[in-house]
Amino acid sequence: MKIAVVAAAGKAGRKICAEAASRGFEVTAFVRRAAEIDGAAKVIVKDIMALERKDLAGFDAVVDAFGTFKPETLSQHSATLKHLCDALSGSDTRLLIVGGAGSLYTNPEHTAQVMDAPNFPDAWKPLAAAQAKALDELRKRDDVKWTFISPACDFQADGERTGKYIVGGEELTLNAAGESVISYADFAVAMVDEIAGGNHIKQRIGVVKA
Image (tube, rainbow, N blue to C red; front, side, top):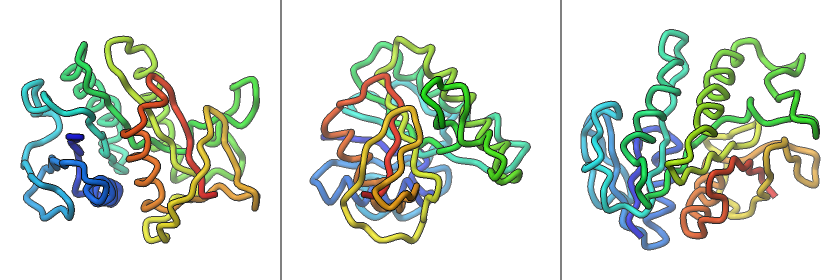
């Protein structure tokens, strides 16, 4: 399979590139600044908002690993995702998004989200809200084969790769130990499995360490 990873220089993007390459995928990494990306057969320096339809043509899947945390740039979550959707509109290329946990629901009625909990850190609420907004906008797109993947609440950049995880749906899923945790490495495993399987088109799923 041929895949593109956009914003590949970030921690999640790098893990996904390496995992995909280890499975024999042909990986093209798009980065804003020149960088070496393990596993990428090709690295292209181009800002996400400058990507055109022709840049993403020919790929089986595009991974959106974009992320920003500064308050003044949070609107870019919606803007960049819309831009990628527009570039892929009507094509067979699938779009898989590295999402957030804050928008996962905590009740069957889907009226409460993780970010609404009293113990949710105030510092993370703007980011969670921005990612939730981007997801709400994505749900309205019928012209793109998208999958939005939310990690567990405790998303560990340096956690080990176990290769084992549980797939949940719209609601927060805990493992047998009652934890909501996953490493970036295991998230990458789940992402690449979803690229290979294509089992959740136009759906949001969540993943947690088994």
